[in-house]
Image (cartoon, rainbow, N blue to C red):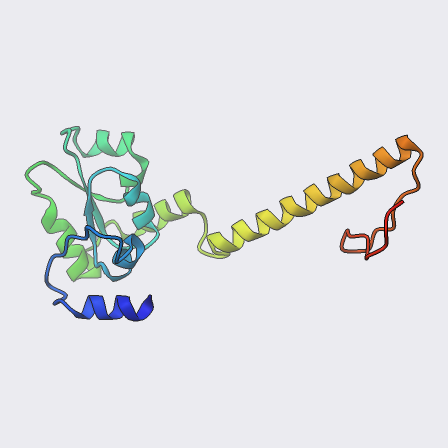
Length: 171
């Protein structure tokens, strides 16, 4: 996949706009090479926030920046585009010159708020949570089995440190 992505992105000039309609490149592949994003209000915005890059969101309902941000948490660090897109220069300035990016710190704060800290990574936090839940479930299962055996008058099975029976047949 990495080779395909490399070839795809080299196949057309970086200055050219692309509309992706097929299965590839994938959404995150596009995020990885984008300098910025313009979107309507959708879950794509929340996904893009992880990149830390500038983004703009269209306020097609004409609510105005303050009300639009109040109603949509994910746009609080975005350039809000009115229907005439007059604010687009602000987004482009942020891409051209990081010093002109007045929303950079807001994006970092919003990213932490929506996605959690950068370290440990979200997958590390997820894996740790799954491991804790698995241990809790295994502990519960062993306790229930021991209580059931005690209630039935059956001698308990030998349990090894990993929670298994160590290959010993149970009574």
